[in-house]
Each structure stands twice: as C-alpha cells, then as structure tokens.
Length: 131
Image (cartoon, rainbow, N blue to C red; front, side, top):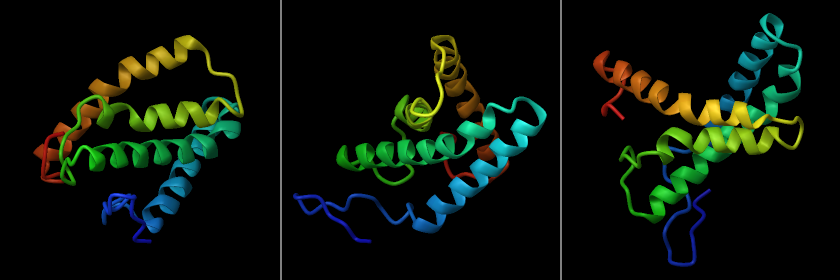
C-alpha cells in the first residue's frame, strides 16, 4: 500500500504482498489441519494462529532488514532463520500453552533445517542465494 516511515523509507518492499500474505495463511492453515488429522487434534487450535504469526514474524524481520538497509534477498543471520518461529510462537501462545521445551526445540532445530533447505533450493536452482 506504499506506506512510508517518518524518514520516508517504505515500510515493506515489493516482495511482500497481500496475495502472498493471505496465501501463506491459507496454505499454512491447511497444512496444520492436515497434520492435526495425522498427529494431534491440538493442532486444530494452533494452525491458523501459527500461520498468521509466522507471516507477521517474517514481515517484522523484513522491516528490520529494511531499517538496517539490507537489500531484498540479503542475509541477516539468525533473524532470517527465526523471525517466523518467534512470530508463530507468540501468536499461538494466546490460544494454547507452549512448553519451554517445545520453544527450545524449535529455536535449536529450525536454523539448521532452514539453512539446509535453502542450500538444497539453491543447488536445484530454485533460489538465487544459498541463504
């Protein structure tokens, strides 16, 4: 929507769209619902807030990168790997209790899985950068 901060810098860049945001929530929620069918009925309660929170966390990371003047697609280690996890955990915590162990596992497991997934996408030519 072309929103700008007081210094004139855009809040989010061209790579963040309403279509992507809504699609991400829909697909994330569907995946969460499918997982609930196979694993636990508890996931029904968290599928939508987790999807929403992950996307809001990603947008917060994008805003931080923009404020630090990191170009689109540029790396910001740790933030790139955890912004969506933090957003999802915060959103889900309003609807369901999350154990400290679960949060720690997510924080420890996500970065290497995220990195390896990105390297795989880079090797397959699906991404321009390995991060």
